[in-house]
Image (cartoon, rainbow, N blue to C red; front, side, top):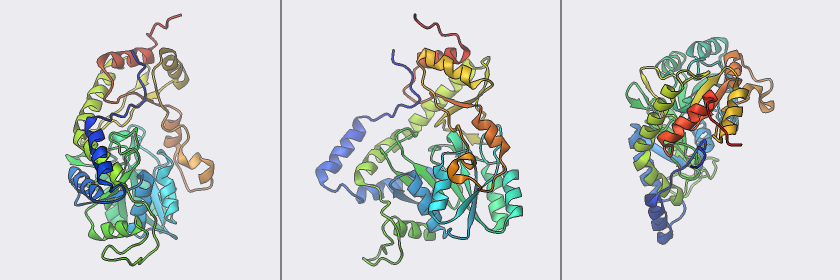
Length: 364
């Protein structure tokens, strides 16, 4: 039996066949395969438009540029996320300001966001991170965005296939940004996507990711980057997208089994508010004694991850940034992510739960 790893990308015959078809075609860079993937992924999310990018960070950066967010602007977001969420804001020339999180869901607390909005007059957007695959409180955050006349951007890098009130993430804000890194619920190797219902945002995205080039000709009407996706990546993505519902169903099944098995363990298992459908990019528990649980997992050969041990506002790169987020700091001290990916079998789930409880007998 192999040790349960924290992640296990699944690449099958369909992905290999599609890549071979692109290789045989000779059209390896941005092209029709990318256009097809954009359309299919946007349709999956329930959005009108999709623009593919080279990775999740460039998707975020391009979205802010397309929304005309830049120098002199700030964006309210969570400090309890991967640093790319804040880095992309700075890449666009704006500055992040941090609100605190809901201690039950680890997502942005709308009341904390509202306090930030009341205190500042330079906020141009809210960046809502659907952390671990659980949608943020979109209704409350969208209402705040409407009240204050600012944009709502979804960081859905971990939430492919997650739902809020029956609608998939990616269709809930002015723009939504996805990552297709190998550990995500689906992958293109590296890659990203921005989905939106706004024609003006799509046009800005297409210019920015292609050196500011006007799509109607060969004029570069603004300064942009080369953030394009390749046909090779898109070929993998199209095959993975077909499998994504099954991937998410397997993650949810494994998560339910873990929650049941950990009912008497010294951890708090993830919550799923009734209006939200978790896609379980990570199955994250809160530990009363994380070091002890980690030691047991290591002894049992079970993979794990701590996402994230240091909140962004406590990182050296963000020293001095406006933040009042004690709950985010507390979460960073207790969270621990356990394997939940589709490659697990029932024996793996039992082994993970036994290790968390300290019931694994380690061979001498």
